[in-house]
Image (spheres, rainbow, N blue to C red):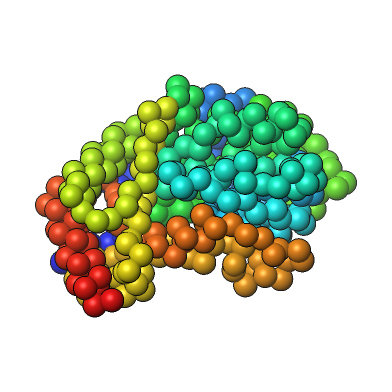
Amino acid sequence: MNIPLARPFLGEEEKEAVVRVIESRRLAMGDTVRQLETALARKFKRSYCAAVSSGSAALYLAIRALGVKRVIIPALTCDAVLHSVVNAGAAVIFADVDRETHNLDPATVPLEHLDAADAIIVTHTYGHPADMEKVEHYVKKYRLTLIEDFAQATGGYFRDKAAGGFGRVSVTSFYGAKVLAAGHGGAILTDDEELYHKCVYGRGSRADRYYRDIIPFNLQMTDLQAAIGLVQLAKLDRMVEMRTRVAGWYDRGFGASPVGLTLQHPWAKPARYKYAIILPENVSKSDFIERMKESGIDVGRLYDPPLHRTERALKIPDKKVNLPVAEELASRTVSLPMYPELTSTDVEKICREVTTTIGVLGANE
C-alpha cells in the first residue's frame, strides 16, 4: 500500500455541506462565501475578510491593494509567493533563512535593500511560525509593510497569538494539501477597511467602492469551496492536534537516526503542515526520493532550487545574491508524508525506510 505525501481530512460533514449548496442552486459568491468570511475574521481576530479563488490570488490582490513596489521575500518558500509578487508588478528582494526553522531571517538582508524595500512577506515554513518579534522589530525600524502569508501555518500560534493575526494584511490558502483544505480558494484578512474594499473590488465581485488604480479580475471563490472551508474551519484545532500527534511519532522514530530535524521553539505552536528532514551530506536527494517511491512512500522535494535560483528569478535584474543557508537546505531537505489520518504503524514504516535508505545510499558514496 502506498503512503501519499498529503491527504485532506474529509468526511460526511463536508459532503453534506456541498450537497446543501448544490440544492440551493447558488454556486458562486453567495451566502456560504459570506458565512466563511465572517467565520474566518472571527477565528483570526480580524475586522475584515475577503474570500478569493486561491492563495496566490489573495497575495496578488493584497500587494496590488497596498501599492507596494519593492518586496522582501524568503528564498526558501513556495514559488507562488515569487509569482504573486512579480505578477502584481513589484520588485523582489530575496532574504536568506534561519537554519533552525527555515523561516525568513530579516538580519540577512543587506542594509541598502532594507532601506529600499517598502514591504516584507513572512511565510511560516512547514507550519512553524516565524520569529514575529524579530520580524516586527525590522518592520518598525525600516518602516516596512508586513504581509503575513500564513497558508502553511493555519491553526498555528506565535506565543499566544494565532498565525493570521499579524501585519497590515494576512493571506492564506485552502488548496487541497493545506492544513485547512477546501480544494482551492484563499482569503485576505485585515483590520484596514480601505484595504479590504480594494481587495473586494479587485476580486471582480460587486463592490461598494471604485478604485481607478486597480483593474478587477475574476478571482472569486465558489460556494462549494466555502462550504467545505466552513466545515474544515470548525475542526481546524482538532486537525492540528492530530498532525501534532503524527509529528511526535516521527520525532521519536528518528531519535537515533542520522537525519537532521527542524527545531521547534518553545514560543511556537506549529500547525505541522509538513514534516521536513535534512538528509546527510553524502546522500543524494534525488536518489533518496526515487528509492522511497519504490518503497511505496511519497516524498516531497520541497523548495529545490530556492527561489533566487529558479528560472523566473534569474530573469530579474540584479539578482546575484548569496544566500548560503537557503541553498544548502534546499539541496538536502525533503518532506515526509503528513496528514491527520496517518497511523503510528505508517510512521514506523516510514522512519524505518528512511533510515534504511539513508544507510544504503550513504554506503554507496
